Image (cartoon, rainbow, N blue to C red; front, side, top):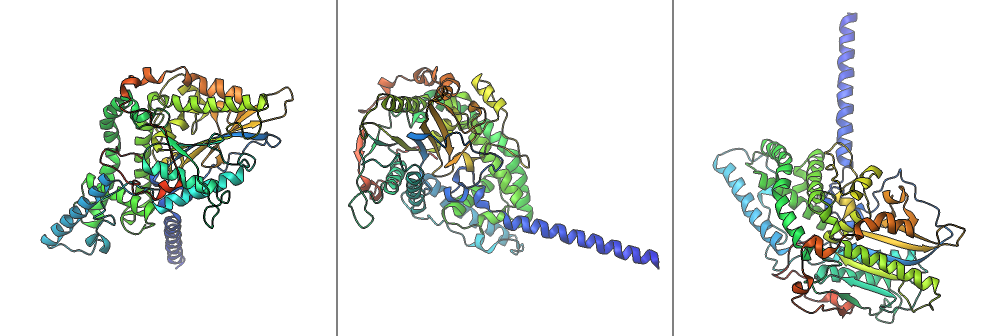
Length: 501
């Protein structure tokens, strides 16, 4: 009798443990927000507050004054490009074929999600693509407001393009992002409309010669390297796609291929990021599968645009030179006592993930101290570890839509130490800089010599194997655009445009 009672008690205990485990996993799934795992397709407001709670920002600049700000920002959330829109329309036809095959084989349709049997692309029939959407406008507009609120002394001057320089690429979603940011930054500073807006200038270089913000597009060596690495990237991602394809075929009874799964993951990212739809394509994947697909995207990003090869970021030396030069000019203005309103206080740049990622690498973000030493010696780094291991290199943090780096130059009262310091903010938060001994700031001289100088010894033309004089098929074409650009019908891809992030 006693033995039977013990067996019953043991069975009850096992059942309770199983229930507890099931509840734990259920709760974990419910708390899993797929929108935080979309690599570079992540919306800024969803991921900007994800941070390393173990990092304590430095307090050494509390008595110092900001005298100049450099901003390098990616454009805001955008629509799929025309190429991707066509791919999604083709994928809708592919899903019809998969469902029809099941029906013709007289198999049960019970496993197939209802939405999948009737799905059509939300962008079906759309003839343009790649433009900044309203969510992207909102991201940059409010970023402009927050930057002004965070650094009121820097933005107290009357607007002049020589004081607040706004630069962008000639891609419409980048220039529209610059306009949206400027509208937020200068809101209430003018007399236009009920919002008190004012006109401001946005300038850009010709696409053919913009080596500061579009260096990736002017660098033939990089184009050759990227093309050579694409088969390697595909091979590295293949095991993940194989594993998930096998699971989806088994779970839903549809004869998915690896390409189908890749398309479903792309659709998931577009639906979740642009439309806030997470119960269709994204629901096909478990949290574990999402984490693996996210890692595969991040791995590709690392190899083709990040620390995977020094050329990926060394080609950004013209941008780094521009940043250092602007700081030196600000220091000169301070030292020589230039009159207020006669010198630049902010240089604001709006471009692409292909700009922001290399710049983050140039200043050594998302590295451990030992890894920083390796890239200084031009040695390769190990790939980001596969889940469930943790990693610093995450696309949703490194370059989400509207992702940004701010380098703030501070002037400090001299007490036998440095007078000028550089503080780095990534997505508006202080971030550790291995080159500054893990702090978020260090003396300008240290920043320049330890972080910038090893890169600046390289020459862009030599790195990229280009003759810029031959590349200029048009004049430099610097032009000014007022905020009306944001309403222009040019905010769409043209046939000649390369697909960019």
